[in-house]
Amino acid sequence: MKVAVIGSGGREHALALKISESEMLKKLYIIPGNPGTAQIGENVNLDINNNAEILNFCNEKEIDLVVIGPEQQLVNGLADELRANDILVFGPDSAASEIEAHKTFAKNLMISAGVPTAKYIEFNLSMYDKANDFIKQKKYPCVIKADGLAAGKGVVICNNAEEAEAALKSFFIDRIFGKSGDKILIEEFLEGEEVSVFAISDGNNFICLPASQDHKRIGDNDTGKNTGGMGAYAPAPVVTTQLLNEISIKIIAPTLQALKAESKPFIGCLYAGLILTSDGVKVIEFNCRFGDPETQAVLPLLKGDFLKLLYSAAEGNLDKDSIQYNAGSAVCVVAASLGYPGQYQKGLEIFGLDEIPESTIVFHAGTKEDNGKILTNGGRVLAVTSVLEENDLQKAKKLAYEALDKIHFTNMYYRRDIADKAIK
Ligand code: AMP
Ligand code: GLY
Image (cartoon, rainbow, N blue to C red; front, side, top):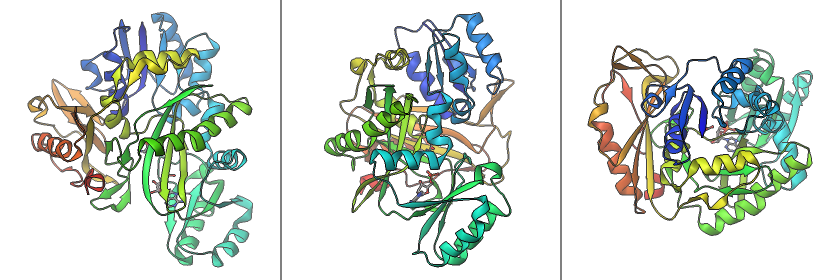
């Protein structure tokens, strides 16, 4: 089978690596890929925002399955275009991707399907004065969110009316998110531990992968700015088998059913961002794709044939037995460039990549190759994942940090406390 993976981050490296283990695979392309994916397949430098260019390539190479990593290309309708031309795709079409592209759509869907989520109220651009009145009588903290895609930055947690006023102004007057901020949600603040659950869906049936936990803030003990994710571990022990079952029944199944009922069947990975409150598990957000860096912790734990799973989902005939998870732990630590998620330097040489022990995988996230050297090329540079056969997150954490000790680049920064919540 010939497979093309779309994207160039750590998530796509993890997807490509797992796919490369399949006996069904004959040829793997990664578009555009990175120096990590170049070691397991062929990188192809195409513009992934140009649907026609990708379609041409897939036709020319007779690609059997396209796996789309990032949300932007899903929202842009890349899956629609490929499916319309009889190419199998793992990844939802643009209508089903609305679950991530528009938070108001996701909220309305959840409310109508009875899926537990934070209480909220919606305001659009013309309701600036009303929104200002509303925040004056609100209980704090509260959460203000942009409706549209905002690269993970569209959420502001407000501790008092002044902060809420400033956030409202930034969305509606300063327009910091442009059209993505045409509508906002003002949402109840939920307290509890956050977990991520990936459901692989063929439009009708689904399976859940082991739950994981991301670390969104830049600093240890969840301090400082929000990032794309500074590390993850899996499985998350707070999500017992019983709780995962409950999440399947109360959250994933009704959401997929509601999408199907709206003629937006979801074929791909539905990512549920959840919070375990004292009042039960609730949804913070849905994404229409695998999470980054959670994928780099979850996929290495799976046994079986991952490509078979994705292919069967894309065909609309999910083979739930194609993968298994029995035991094992993984801890993924992101090595970033100092300054991220703000300004940072690029083009710094990375050393030590050939000294990594076998128990650890180094996923490339923001790197590039230059004359045989590997250089930094992004904020999140590497995702270093240790993988153990046994359930021992403490040992997995130790192995991940031992591997990180071998890697160096100028101004390398990483959190020291990945997985501590679970180890405690
Ligand atoms: P999102 O971009 O929707 O994933 O939100 C970013 C982060 O904001 C989440 O990971 C949570 O930590 C936090 N967050 C979002 N919504 C809420 C909420 N209703 N209550 C508490 N925290 C929230
Ligand atoms: N790890 C968060 C995300 O992928 O959105």
